[in-house]
Each structure stands twice: as C-alpha cells, then as structure tokens.
Length: 236
Image 1: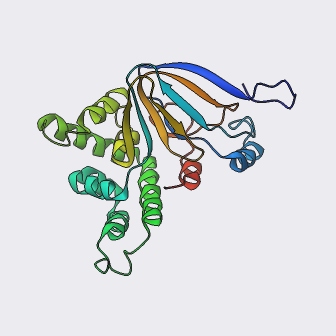
Image 2 (image 1 turned 30 degrees about the vertical axis):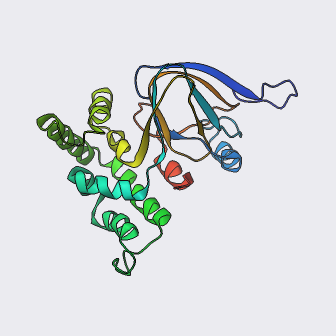
C-alpha cells in the first residue's frame, strides 16, 4: 500500500514474514532517490517514499545484510576462482590493490576500499546480462563444492541452498560479497536506505516506512533494476 497525502495515512507498515525461500537481493531508496524513481518510472516505483526497515527474529532467522569488509571479499576471490574469473582481472586488481599493504599496490591499482568495492561490484553485476557465463560459473562452483565438502565450509551450505532455489542465478555468489547473519529469537537488524540485503530463512516481524519501493538485482523472478541498485548503494 503506497502512502497518500491524507493526515490519516498510516505512517508505517507492519508485517509478519515466514521465509521458506530466499527473498530477492535488494535495497530501498532514500527519500530523495525514491522521489526521482517515482517521477521517472511510476509504473515500477509507485510512490515517492523511502523504506527503511527493521526485522525482529521470531525464530532463528538468516539474512544477508551489508557488504563484508573488503579484506574478506579479497580472501573470497582467492578461494573462489569461479568468482574471480566472472569478475575479471581489472575488478579483481581493484580489490587486491585496496587491501595491499601501503606501498605495494601499483598506481593503477591503488584506490580507497569504498571506490574499489564500487568498481568491483559494478563489474560483477554487469555480468548478469551474460546469463550463459553466469550459469557456467555457478555450475562450476556447485560442482566443486559437491566434490569437496571441505571447500568454503562457512559458506558451503548457503551457496548450495541458493543454487537449489535459484539455479544459475548471479545471486548465488552474493554471500561472497554480503554479510551472512543468523539472528536468534529476539535479535534484530536495521536495514537503512541504500544498503543491500536479502532474507534467507526463518520467521520475523518487520516494521518499515510506508512504501512499496524495492530495487532488486538477483534471486528473484521479479523485475531487476541492476543499474539503479549499483548506483544507489553506499558501499560502506
């Protein structure tokens, strides 16, 4: 339900969610961006409001929220050649250059962590258009995980589960980029504007600003707006 201009309009939305299958990789625009998106594409972004939200776990609740530290992402690139190959040498160099000790990165590689992350993630998401290459990379990753149960132990379960739910989707690689969290009942997460996230499993109570605005980029059959999502994120 989109907000209206009347003084009686409900200022927030309240939901109880039971997540049996991962929900889309997404972000919600801030107030200014929501206004621009609504003006440009009112058929997709149906109101001019922002949508910060909070989720309170009712059961053990699994979600992805916010970018990992860039050093973790660099480590994942070393451990997952399928991701590195999909990303491309230039974007990999941006990440490794931003994490190299002072003085060791070349002038072309040196960049702030935020700038490097923006460059690399934009390059990664641009590959979504090459469905054949993405599908092949996911298939190679899954084959390797199934052949070697000791590979990527912290992420193995969620990677295989995401591929079962969304075979060959570029979002299968999202846990390499985003923090994977498990909340115990009573714990909560706040999802600010322009921060990437996805709910993976469990039951929660959710409270948010009154808006329908969602910018999606993976793990969904719904409309994806990859260019908007890449441009809007904070990369913090």
